Amino acid sequence: MKTRASSPFLRIAAKLENLAAIRRFVEETAAALGVGLATVTDIVLAVDEAVSNIVVHGYQGQPGAIEIEVKRERDALLICLRDEAPPFDPTNVPAPDLTAPLEQRATDGMGIHLIRQIMDKVTHRKTSQGGNELLLVKRLGENSEDFDMCN
Amino acid sequence: MKISTCVTENGVVLLEVEGEVDAHTARKLDKTLKDLLAQGHSRLVLDASQMGYISSAGLRVVLLTHRKARQLGGEVRLSGLNAQVRRIFEIAGFDELLRISDTRQESMEGW
Image (cartoon, rainbow over all chains, first blue to last red; front, side):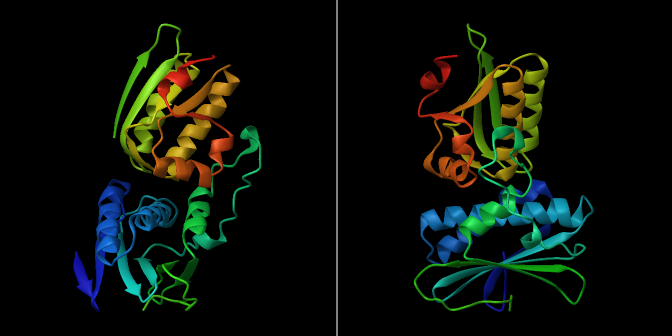
């Protein structure tokens, strides 16, 4: 783990084999920032889904790196994911129809559905270097302060 | 993640999945389940009492297997989910598509 601007961050190869290490990093960092166990568990899943999307749909098997920064801003936990993959905005993926019967139930889009259910805000933007930046925000209290971009 | 399988006396296959099922490890689960379906097994009980985690990649494998098993006259049943894993199935709406029991004994009954 390294520290950039006082926030813990992890830079790691964009491989599905690294998902477990990424989960441990997010789990330990969020807990150290005072986030409760149940919320940590949810956030770990959301980050796992976001990283899996970056590896599969962003890099599409090509080598690359993902940077994960976790920080607490008062009553919110912010997770910023950065990559250098071709632009891929997971927030454009339509939500699956959860009322569809088994035979018609879509299996794609479930990851972003889980992220949306868990996190309070998901924001994507293309970076000036041509990669992606995804900000996941989880509110930890009643404060309605807004967060638009990674800083 | 570890998977152990056994075929019971009445032909139901019991799978014990231990550890974490994510987009990496789900491939192994997918292969195991596809092999069982190819061998004609369609009544599958997935004991998740030792499963600590599952992501959408694992849910996808379970759903696709359940769909295929139904076409073959069987189904996938789940048992022993911990609170976190059960919550993920519920958020995904899969708890209404699959039979989920507290114990594997309940899942083994009534085929």
